Image 1 (cartoon, rainbow, N blue to C red):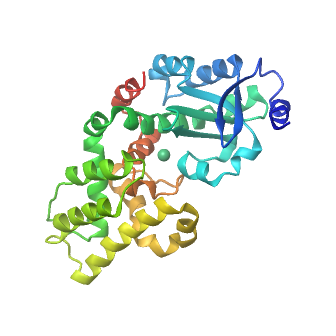
Image 2 (image 1 turned 90 degrees about the vertical axis):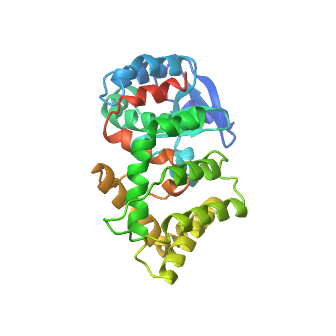
Length: 299
Ligand SMILES: [Zn+2]
């Protein structure tokens, strides 16, 4: 019965519908017509048009799946968090389990909606492709984007540990460690992994921070607590997020300082665990030639 309802909710003129995947036990539908309209929309957007050959290939081989979004799916908090913004009737997410990107498009009037929202759709597509690119490209992805990652995390750590401008430090090792411990493991990290990260933070910053010993230890502890809380229970994290504002709020400043980006679109916190989030955000604001190289990891 549920499937019939999904079917009835699909827009008129969508073409022949087929089941393309499942999300929390609900079937997702797509059609040749939806795929064609999605690719046509991506072909005219600045963020995606130069790579349209690769995007078209990824859609045709069903690595990127545009599908219809029913209202019921919008309710899942975890997709609001893991995926791109769910507003505007479109949302996207990357599923590491099935190695696919789903672009969910609300069951509204197909023709009008796509052309009105193609730019937003291009943003979420390219955003999710970077997460996927990190998953596939692994160390090559990190190497490729290390200059941008370093800029961002240097600004972030300098801010939270109050490091004086005259002091320089390297964050490559921290970035690689974060990626290995949190992102590559799919957040299946242990307390001893957290301890390793803790030790690296202390050894990197203890001699250059201007915070006193107690303040420094508090920031390190709160940073680890935020990671732990978010990974174990997102709902609990959201309830308590205000208590950790001194940890996540500097992430917004880091986007501004490193790239001049005023990021008001997303809830910053994933950056503490997933380094690919930083890249996924910055490519929404500006096209980097190496976006293409990242897309090639997926083909
Ligand atoms: Zn993201």
